[in-house]
Image: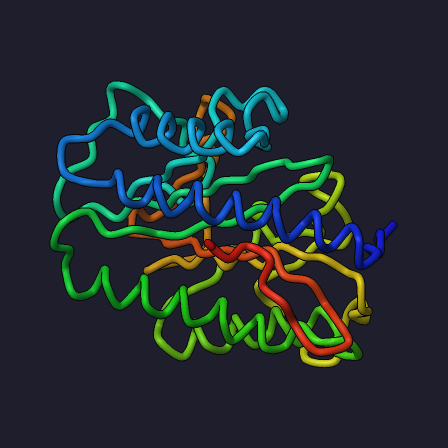
Length: 250
Ligand code: MG
């Protein structure tokens, strides 16, 4: 069931989104050679709690941290660890959600650590741009397939692939709500978008093939071919005036 939000609820979600976005920003600023992914997670958690919010991911399905931190060939759901030290040349995907007054924000960004290879930078640029192209399609009257097909076309035209096994989602009082928001699809197909819907659009883009594999810990999801993967996400509201990004830093 898709829950439409009232304007009052959207105002709360905007604040949850701001907190999520700022937590992502400070986490990104902590990315530098020699830092552990555990330390990056702690920075994010501290910020969220300083705002009177709760990290959405902490304990969700048993997830042990506030942020998912996924380095290089890890696509999503990387578990922060004191033993994992990031180094120059790595790409570091950070996914963070915050719950404020009963509503969630959810966003992700892949940060370069120091200088990265040009082909890694191209992957980051293409993935980030594909998200914004997808967001442009998130308007009332369009369908989910318009978002997914736009992301897919943008990414595949640049020689990359979109992950199939994981998709975006509705977001609101629950972190994951209906509908599913795939990063692939057919224009004009799927659920029709209505004002009051709030969705997380989150392209996960692989340098090589789209196949992924979940490791034994039950979380860490890697590319099957070992190549790089990037992840960018915003929480977006469908409004009569077009798409509104809720996960904006102040
Ligand atoms: Mg999400």
